[in-house]
Length: 488
Image 1: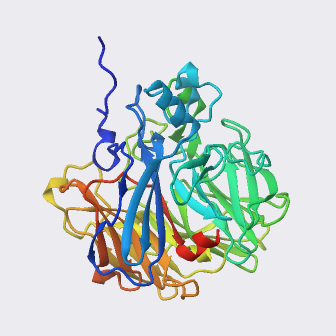
Image 2 (image 1 turned 180 degrees about the vertical axis):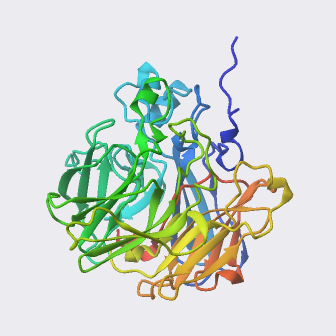
Image 3 (image 1 turned 45 degrees about the horizontal axis):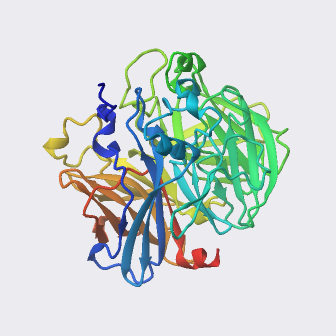
């Protein structure tokens, strides 16, 4: 009798090792003092494989697992649930993995033909009183914000969503409450169609404008200002020939340039202009703003492919130095009709990924950003020296007005996941509040949730929520104040 598949691939060890457990833990242990004004819920989503893959796969294809830390009256409760996508439910019924490798339906079991492949494993977001889990290859999944139970496994805004895809990084307008989103490969695999979406503050999809991109590839994030919408197309190209051979959806094509596309917000897309740039990789927008006819977009940008588990099309090995992200400002003046390219400026020497901002400033001028960084000058536990890549060891705050930075160092034996900013109050100044996020303690076999004063990172955590076990690796998190959740 043959042995069933197991989690033997090295990619499924360390921070990406599956947890596979749904957990309820009331009254988590807290070291230090929780801020009295910290009331709300920190939601986090990441990939967690339901069953061992039958064929080689990458960590990004794990089933969506959502967790929440609820802060109330000096207590913290934790809950996590697998998201009951169409994919999850089919595999649970069969008690085995049925879907193949990352975003390649050719490798799926015939029993799942016609089901959504979406894993809802990338980002949680709260809008118009609803909690959603997002994955960019499929529509949102709606969840109950109190129980985390799945409410709707294919949320299409009352049948109005025509795009087959929906970004993991929508932007909530800081003034109107609108949610601006998009979907790439919107009409199907390898299509060059992008749907640009506007959802009003009540959750009504009010506009779906379709545009074309110069070539088909990953559009993970974008930028929205009061006046403009911008997309950066990077050489993470959709690899149809590779998929026909059983490979994953993407391959890095170093022969391709980048293109920065800018269009007027609220228009029909006919004014969209593309500006050419060199080979670069950037997947997350820290912040953006428009100044007259010039738009500025800040991203964590590397020179090469930033994903060690996505192959280079030319067969070359992953370049960890070329993949290092630095906060880079892209800009273009739309008044210069003849200019063919965009401008780039590296703002800081720090290297890292998963840049964030104060989410209240998504569409207006901003001056404060945060990023998970790797500071190679800081000590590293010798037991981590053989790891395939150095753990992120700092959260760094960037104050653009003064070009100043400050950092929190987690320690030589630990690593940090993405941080999330929490305003001290609804009307607090930009960047006045807390940073929350998970620290991995690999040699203790568990995790911590850290709470820091966002203006005094070097002083270390105000409070540490000590988990008695390791929790799954998140991709992105979202903070919902208690007042907003109740109002929803």
